[in-house]
Image 1 (spheres, helix red, strand yellow):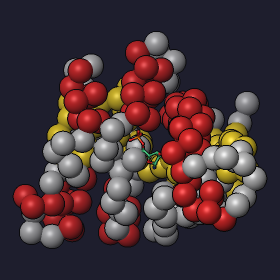
Image 2 (tube, protein in one colour; image 1 turned 120 degrees about the horizontal axis):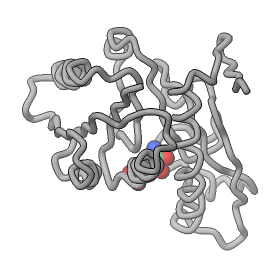
Image 3 (cartoon, protein in one colour; image 1 turned 45 degrees about the horizontal axis):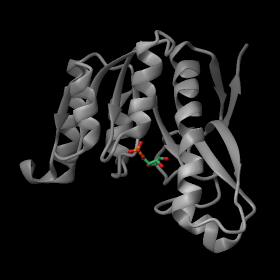
Image 4 (cartoon, helix red, strand yellow; image 1 turned 120 degrees about the vertical axis):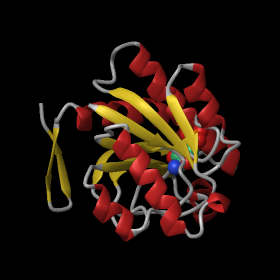
Length: 200
Ligand code: GRF
């Protein structure tokens, strides 16, 4: 299966996917990495391993709709069959999701549905929960609201800060995101409404 990745920032999850892919363990090929930011380290990480990469800065387009349209055309040109969001900081519109007709998945640094949106780790620390974690989910038209594929819990320690909790959650993200991509890419998930079942 051909995978496209969209990322806005440092791209550590992209790097985790690249490493598993390079070991021949991803069950899929990363063929394109796109970003809404020209300075995203994620683009450089793709470049370093010879993966096609492109920035789509908003200022090159009249509207967000046109920016999304350009991203979608480019993904189609590359024959992308699964779209993986890895720290992509734009919410994809309903129009994009309806038009794209391939699965779109995302990773979020909390145990959804808790702490949707930005700064999930800070929200967890401030709320005082004892457990947080990360979630890989299908993207639907809501914010961090799609059907859940994988989740793993991470303990919140008494002296945790946003930064220390983020670091520990990130380690888990780097393990479960490649695992989830492999499950989806190799057809080992089935969806019944909201509920995703992992097949043996
Ligand atoms: C991760 O914490 C991910 O869960 C969230 O954005 C962050 C991206 O980090 N969606 P990176 O760019 O993959 O390092």
